Image 1 (cartoon, rainbow, N blue to C red):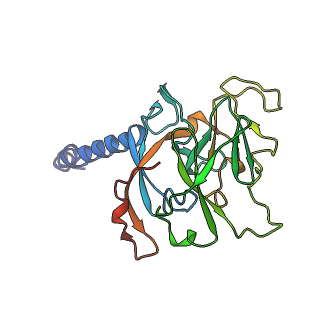
Image 2: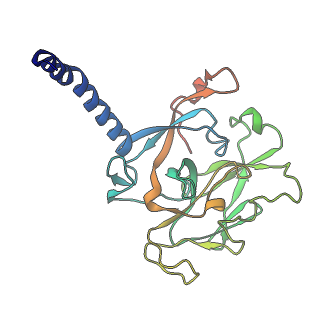
Image 3: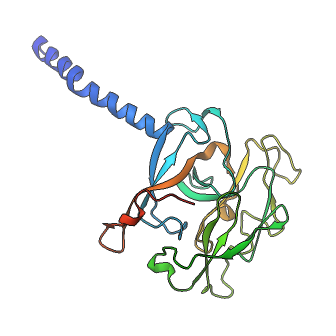
Length: 254
């Protein structure tokens, strides 16, 4: 390479390539540690979150982590019952969006799709008949308001489950029918699991009979929780030529 070509290459790197790389690094680090958005490709959170919604994720809600990792520099709060959290699945590592239904120290049971926390059944009331619902939930589902923590929300229950087909209405592989005590960090309940390396949280989808959640893969460790989802940024209707659902733009999540 001639000296002239080398000078041109260095000039191009300094004036063109390096500023773009720095901008990309800053942007991706911001998304990793401060705020991000998450596309929702499935219906496990219907009727709260529709397929095609893009949700805002506050990654500073629970702590500050090292960019591009799950290592935390500081933790100042933990997810609370009823909040919607974004986390990595302990089974597959895929990023998921579910609702926090139980926190460290609580015991959770599920009987006929109803939550029982520390031996007390969660109350369910009639759902607002005017709440929005997608076409795939219009039939063969019933709805109720689940009064969980400070975040009452509507949940969906299927009415057309086939008899004899395994389902998660009374627990699942990750939730014994007798209930599961969620361990705090370092706690050993002498149940064969040993001391907990981290706090444990139990996550479930609002579409209760169509959600692969903690009933399948078990509790979620604290380090795998990325942030809290509290608002829809915008939404595209996959069943209507990907047209925007304008009434869901900046819609707050219960």
